[in-house]
Length: 76
Image (cartoon, rainbow, N blue to C red; front, top):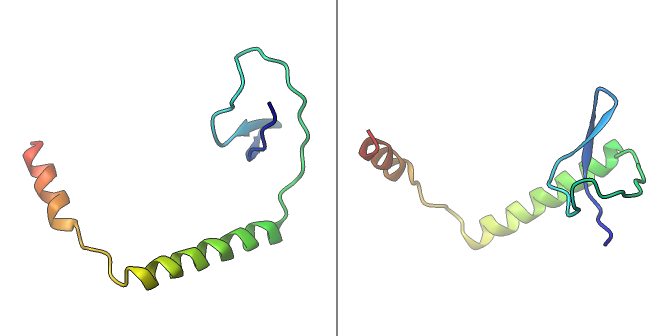
């Protein structure tokens, strides 16, 4: 199985941002490529374009503030 995933380096150790699809103690090969700033900007641009397409289809999302407040009060 091959998997491509995003990770962050913390104190010199790679920490995956999502769960790995491998068994515990399974040996794997790792290839590391730094994520360039323009890659992040390109991703952000794609997200914003998707957001705009959603807002065009659903111009105003319902305000669920009162429903959330009711749910919280019921839990007290």
